[in-house]
Image (cartoon, rainbow, N blue to C red; front, side, top):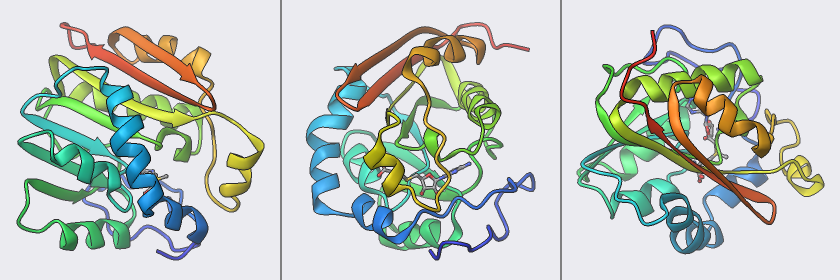
Length: 213
Ligand SMILES: C[S@@+](CC[C@H](N)C(=O)[O-])C[C@H]1O[C@@H](n2cnc3c(N)ncnc32)[C@H](O)[C@@H]1O
């Protein structure tokens, strides 16, 4: 995945106008043993907070797939969505024959029917969306594909100098954690939880029983 590569044909015709590619150093970090360890031991247990994600889980912004790997050991079926074509293709090849289906699509316009998933995972992805409006559209879309009572969970990073440096030439629009609960409610979620630890935060919110119109 080269920086500057435009998104090619997307599974959804409403492809976004921005390039989701992340720079090479960032990509190496997201594919490293160090990141796999952090995801498995810290980020995923923290985000799930002892909840079971259920029988059919969606992950958005899968990237090289280290969250996918940790998650797929905990769920019967996982659909992993990634917008970047080469990353989606590589992950599809790597996980062929497993309990994971990899779909190239935009998390803001998902090619799935409403109410399909028991839970949706969104790790280190929201800050890769180019505007707050795009982030809010993704939150609404994640709410749409959740079953009533299902939940969204994930983690993201705060706006720090080192994280800004890592995102050189990447999209980087950090979500202020103190805004997130309100934005989750506006997207149709209930009972939002947002917890900060160090320079990261976790979030979890339940799909309200009534689908917003
Ligand atoms: C920093 S990576 C995180 C990868 C993985 N979630 C992890 O934590 O290891 C963010 C990923 O989100 C993807 N992405 C950005 N915008 C997206 C969108 N609208 N829909 C789906 N994926 C998107 C990027 O291509 C990138 O692979």
